[in-house]
Image (cartoon, rainbow, N blue to C red):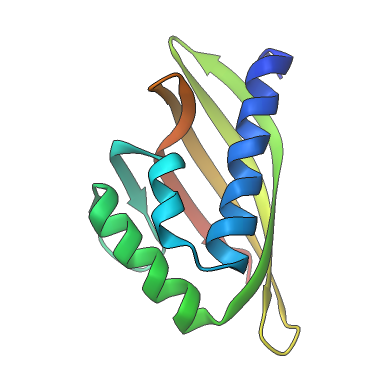
Length: 127
Protein backbone atom coordinates (compact mmCIF):
# COMPACT_ATOMS: atom_id res chain seq x y z
CA UNK A 1 0.00 0.00 0.00
CA UNK A 2 1.32 3.39 -0.94
CA UNK A 3 -1.30 5.34 1.00
CA UNK A 4 -0.28 7.29 4.11
CA UNK A 5 -1.35 6.06 7.53
CA UNK A 6 -3.51 9.18 7.94
CA UNK A 7 -5.42 8.44 4.73
CA UNK A 8 -5.70 4.73 5.60
CA UNK A 9 -7.21 5.65 8.97
CA UNK A 10 -9.69 8.05 7.34
CA UNK A 11 -10.70 5.36 4.86
CA UNK A 12 -11.19 2.80 7.62
CA UNK A 13 -13.35 5.24 9.59
CA UNK A 14 -15.58 5.77 6.55
CA UNK A 15 -15.79 2.02 5.87
CA UNK A 16 -16.67 1.37 9.53
CA UNK A 17 -19.30 4.12 9.41
CA UNK A 18 -20.96 2.43 6.44
CA UNK A 19 -21.07 -0.91 8.27
CA UNK A 20 -22.28 0.38 11.63
CA UNK A 21 -24.59 3.25 10.73
CA UNK A 22 -25.93 2.31 7.30
CA UNK A 23 -25.99 -1.50 7.35
CA UNK A 24 -26.59 -2.29 11.03
CA UNK A 25 -28.73 0.70 12.00
CA UNK A 26 -30.32 1.58 8.64
CA UNK A 27 -29.29 5.26 8.96
CA UNK A 28 -29.46 5.91 5.24
CA UNK A 29 -28.83 9.68 5.56
CA UNK A 30 -25.32 8.88 6.85
CA UNK A 31 -24.49 8.06 3.22
CA UNK A 32 -24.02 11.85 2.81
CA UNK A 33 -20.81 11.38 4.83
CA UNK A 34 -19.71 8.35 2.81
CA UNK A 35 -20.36 9.19 -0.86
CA UNK A 36 -19.33 12.34 -2.74
CA UNK A 37 -22.13 14.53 -4.11
CA UNK A 38 -21.53 13.24 -7.66
CA UNK A 39 -20.81 9.64 -6.68
CA UNK A 40 -21.60 6.68 -8.89
CA UNK A 41 -22.18 3.05 -7.98
CA UNK A 42 -22.10 0.02 -10.24
CA UNK A 43 -24.05 -2.70 -8.44
CA UNK A 44 -24.08 -6.22 -9.87
CA UNK A 45 -26.90 -6.98 -12.27
CA UNK A 46 -28.17 -3.43 -12.76
CA UNK A 47 -27.36 -0.11 -14.40
CA UNK A 48 -25.03 2.60 -13.19
CA UNK A 49 -26.59 4.70 -10.42
CA UNK A 50 -25.52 8.34 -10.06
CA UNK A 51 -25.90 10.93 -7.31
CA UNK A 52 -26.47 10.63 -3.58
CA UNK A 53 -30.28 10.64 -3.69
CA UNK A 54 -30.37 7.68 -6.07
CA UNK A 55 -27.59 5.91 -4.16
CA UNK A 56 -29.50 6.33 -0.89
CA UNK A 57 -32.62 4.90 -2.50
CA UNK A 58 -30.62 1.94 -3.83
CA UNK A 59 -29.03 1.09 -0.48
CA UNK A 60 -32.27 1.44 1.45
CA UNK A 61 -33.95 -1.05 -0.87
CA UNK A 62 -30.96 -3.40 -1.24
CA UNK A 63 -30.22 -3.74 2.48
CA UNK A 64 -33.88 -4.50 3.20
CA UNK A 65 -34.32 -6.86 0.23
CA UNK A 66 -31.19 -8.87 1.06
CA UNK A 67 -31.95 -8.74 4.80
CA UNK A 68 -28.36 -7.74 5.58
CA UNK A 69 -27.81 -7.48 9.34
CA UNK A 70 -24.05 -6.94 9.52
CA UNK A 71 -21.08 -6.13 7.31
CA UNK A 72 -17.33 -5.78 7.60
CA UNK A 73 -15.10 -4.13 4.99
CA UNK A 74 -11.39 -4.90 4.74
CA UNK A 75 -8.88 -3.14 2.51
CA UNK A 76 -6.73 -5.58 0.52
CA UNK A 77 -4.75 -2.87 -1.29
CA UNK A 78 -4.89 0.90 -1.72
CA UNK A 79 -2.88 3.04 -4.11
CA UNK A 80 -2.73 6.79 -4.64
CA UNK A 81 -3.80 7.98 -8.08
CA UNK A 82 -3.20 11.72 -8.37
CA UNK A 83 -5.47 13.38 -5.82
CA UNK A 84 -7.49 10.21 -5.25
CA UNK A 85 -7.07 6.71 -3.90
CA UNK A 86 -8.08 3.39 -5.47
CA UNK A 87 -9.01 0.74 -2.90
CA UNK A 88 -9.43 -2.97 -3.57
CA UNK A 89 -11.20 -4.73 -0.76
CA UNK A 90 -13.37 -7.51 0.47
CA UNK A 91 -16.59 -7.42 2.42
CA UNK A 92 -18.28 -10.04 4.53
CA UNK A 93 -22.04 -9.68 4.83
CA UNK A 94 -24.27 -11.44 7.33
CA UNK A 95 -27.89 -11.98 6.37
CA UNK A 96 -30.88 -12.69 8.60
CA UNK A 97 -30.64 -16.32 9.60
CA UNK A 98 -26.84 -16.12 9.76
CA UNK A 99 -26.02 -16.79 6.10
CA UNK A 100 -22.65 -15.31 5.09
CA UNK A 101 -21.96 -13.66 1.74
CA UNK A 102 -18.44 -12.80 0.53
CA UNK A 103 -18.05 -9.73 -1.68
CA UNK A 104 -15.13 -8.08 -3.46
CA UNK A 105 -15.08 -4.40 -4.35
CA UNK A 106 -13.14 -1.49 -5.82
CA UNK A 107 -13.71 2.05 -4.53
CA UNK A 108 -12.33 5.23 -6.06
CA UNK A 109 -11.92 7.68 -3.17
CA UNK A 110 -11.86 11.48 -3.42
CA UNK A 111 -11.67 14.22 -0.84
CA UNK A 112 -14.78 16.34 -0.45
CA UNK A 113 -15.17 19.00 2.23
CA UNK A 114 -11.94 17.79 3.86
CA UNK A 115 -13.15 14.20 4.18
CA UNK A 116 -12.22 11.09 2.17
CA UNK A 117 -15.37 9.71 0.51
CA UNK A 118 -16.41 7.07 -1.98
CA UNK A 119 -16.66 8.58 -5.47
CA UNK A 120 -17.08 5.41 -7.53
CA UNK A 121 -18.05 2.06 -6.01
CA UNK A 122 -18.27 -1.29 -7.81
CA UNK A 123 -18.68 -4.74 -6.28
CA UNK A 124 -19.79 -8.29 -6.90
CA UNK A 125 -20.50 -11.39 -4.89
CA UNK A 126 -18.12 -14.35 -4.80
CA UNK A 127 -20.95 -16.88 -5.11
